[in-house]
Amino acid sequence: MTHHESYGGSPQGPPPNLPPGPPAYGAQPAYGVPPAYGVPPAYGVPPAYGAQAPYGAPPAHGVRAPYGGYTPLPTVPGGLGTASIVLAAAVSVLQAASWLTSFSAAEEFAQAARVGIPSAEVFTTYDAVGGVLVAAQLAAAIVTCVWLWQSRTFAEAVSPRAHHARSRVWTWLGWIVPVVAFWFPYQVVRDVRAATVRDPRVALGWWWAGWLLFGLATNVEAQFTSSSSAGAYETFTILPVAETVGTAAVALALVMWVRVVREITAGQRAAAAPDPAGAPWS
Image (cartoon, rainbow, N blue to C red; front, side, top):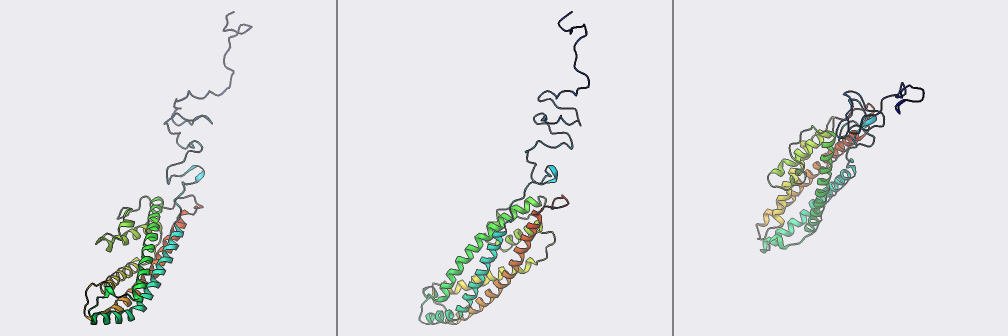
């Protein structure tokens, strides 16, 4: 009797009806056969089709996760959208105050011009209101650009195949770069909304027309208040007219901007809400 034989003469072998052991570490299982439960697949080898990835491993962005979930989307910038609306309303109120004070300011500028004093050397209530207005416009611009940046990030996450005419950096630069400022911001807002809102209804053209007209009126007003030489006193009668146009334009832009921001925010929240059917938004 050899040492390979048990007592009684029969050789030892594996007990019958036992499942095969797991493959060696690093060995790939047969194609289409999932690895044994609890045994990780070989490093760098994807699991069999239909097999669940190891627990805790995050799926790619926008790819269905285990148990029908999805990777989380960026946070909806609803607070920034509200802040943008509030600051835009503040700009509109200050613009109305500027319009009210422009009538007396035009008379003061005209009287100074009669004696050879340029308007830049005359300080009026109109100028004080204008200084606060500029500060409000700067704050509104910063908050709006931050909101647009985050909304663009959200749009790219929820609709990665959506077309954007301008790169993300133009959410900031589009407002200040000469010439292109006449249409780049409009394109940025248009494309963000198209990638976020399934059924847009607000007419963006009215918002943009009001904004451009307000900017034009503001430039005309600045020509009267910042002149370093005394001009003809009759020209200052145009100041209240320009202020009237600017106030009407900014009121139009505000009403439409409120609707645009609310529409985009509603689309963002709808896209971020879990879909009972388990389907992605786009």
